[in-house]
Amino acid sequence: MSHIILTGATGLAGSAILQQALSSPSISKVSILTRRPVAAADGNPKANVIIHKDFTSYPPELLNQLSGASACIWAQGISSVGMKEDEYTTITKTYPLAAAEAFKELPVDGKFKFVYMSGRGADQNGNASQMFGRVKGDAEKQLLGIASGKPTFSVYNLRPAAIDPGKVWTADRKPSFLEKAVFSIGLAQVLRPLMPSLFITTEKLAEVSVALALGDGEKLTGEGINHDGFTIENSAIRRMAGL
Image 1 (spheres, rainbow, N blue to C red):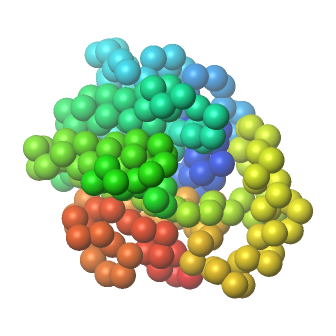
Image 2 (image 1 turned 60 degrees about the horizontal axis):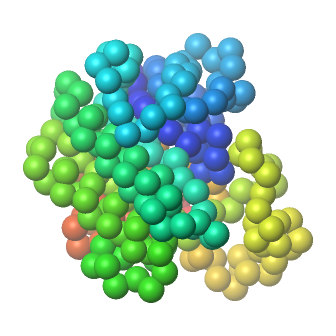
């Protein structure tokens, strides 16, 4: 039975991951780092909700609460639309890097797995024209750098494309205008059969995220896995989910 850490539990991907983790017979405890209460965790004996205001700091008393954890799924994030680059960088890169630096020192049998929710278009070479791709790509690169210096710490960078909530919206926040246009008005129904490789449901993304958190932390191979063995494109997420 595993103890995992989760951030972003009230978001689109994170809320689905929380449901998957709480229902998994292989997971005994989910420590949820959050700025506000998580309604979906209320009353669940597996859920350990930790109100955490500063995602750049992990003091000893917090790390003590996370003792025994063998993985973290970092689903915290925000759309880059309308964001200033420094603010977006803080949330998207500074926060997960600070967590990885802290969590790599947690004692663990085998390897600690850090599953980072990135996105399609992230570019570790810094060549992306969009802010999203540059910042996410650099976060991926630096996380892999942390892992390269710690044999007992592994990082998986997940690059989902269009995250499809399906018929049930589980996130605490309301859908954006774009999400409404794609998923509520019906555009997705047209695009799914034409371009299925662009989509991944929240349920299947959650299944893959939890499976990686419960895995051995070793390199992956196959179509859609980047040469580093730890960066996973949407096509590979779909394949791993049996789609």
